[in-house]
Image 1 (cartoon, rainbow, N blue to C red):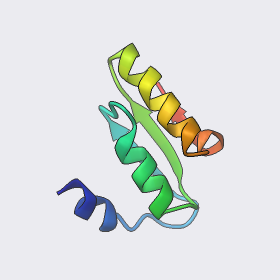
Image 2 (cartoon, rainbow, N blue to C red):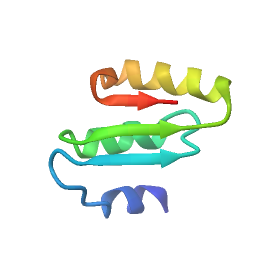
Image 3 (cartoon, helix red, strand yellow):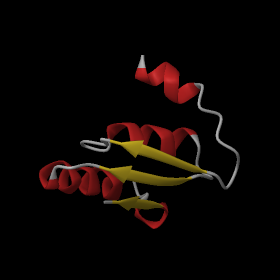
Image 4 (cartoon, rainbow, N blue to C red):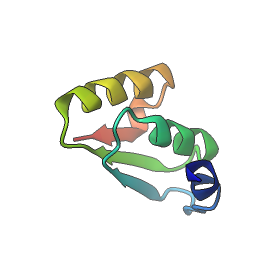
Length: 69
């Protein structure tokens, strides 16, 4: 279901997407690939998940438009 949800987001060019509970960053990477003109924000309570998400975002080359906290 999440792939369909991402496909239906329809953020405006230059817009932002916030994921609360971003975990490993899988969804943020998928959103970033589908919508290359949006800024990405991810929040997670787990430091380990944020570390994993940062690695995923870096591998995808999206560090310049992603903020994780």
